[in-house]
Length: 314
Ligand SMILES: Nc1ncnc2c1ncn2[C@@H]1O[C@H](COP(=O)(O)OP(=O)(O)OP(=O)(O)O)[C@@H](O)[C@H]1O
Figure 1: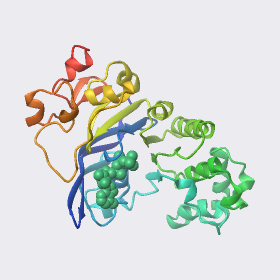
Figure 2: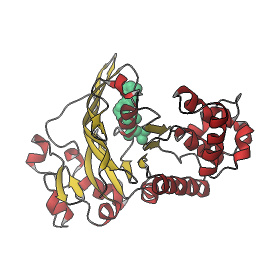
Figure 3: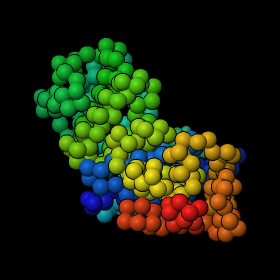
Figure 4: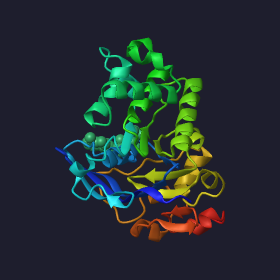
């Protein structure tokens, strides 16, 4: 397995709202190597978007962040969110939810892709123009289209252009938040194939946020299954299907409906966040929070009963 390019350790995020404090991320641990794809999956509200916005240092001022985001071993959160700025777009880049609608209608696509290069002093003038052409080609758009305006592009092309823009400053890590929702199935597959190709060709570490499980497998070898602001299980996609080590992943990957709802994140609880919805829960599960522990070389689970769940005896 490649060395972890990006390692997130015990990441917490709180949002302070007039009605109280929401503890949205509660000790997130994930690792991604160069050329690897990691899916962040889980039900709506489990903290997927919050996690990648925290890694980018793009959370609103109402957020408080604690924990470590290590890039090649350096904690880019060491001096708070502001210290992430130096790495944003140049080392870590992001494709936002609905990125294809984020282009300004009044500037050409090429000019907009060149903008981050100018801002980060990566390239300007002729060099930037040449780089824009390269980037468009990389994402499967004819380079002459650089002089076109966003409305002249289809949704799929705009999404490719948004990916090109994220890659403008040659980041090592690409964080993509639901990059294919709102696209039709065929275009969706093309965009996922593009991400997969970029991961291998450029050796990019790709973190893909989605609630759509088939989407994950097209780009990612592994997934972190999130529940209530933490990782419930971290494993290869194949294992999540065949021998999941957490009852929540088992339910999610078997496609069945999960009765009940996730806990409110403005409350704290002593035990496992999933226990109230878990058919296997014992007394201990309601009183003692399980830690994420290895279940095998490439699998870890935060469940007191992980071994018997994975072994199919629970
Ligand atoms: N800016 C914010 N202010 C207050 N609370 C927030 C903010 N952003 C997120 N939250 C809360 O943090 C929790 C996690 O939200 P987040 O959007 O990260 O989840 P998600 O897993 O990405 O969900 P979805 O799939 O719906 O995007 C939710 O309870 C949400 O209400």
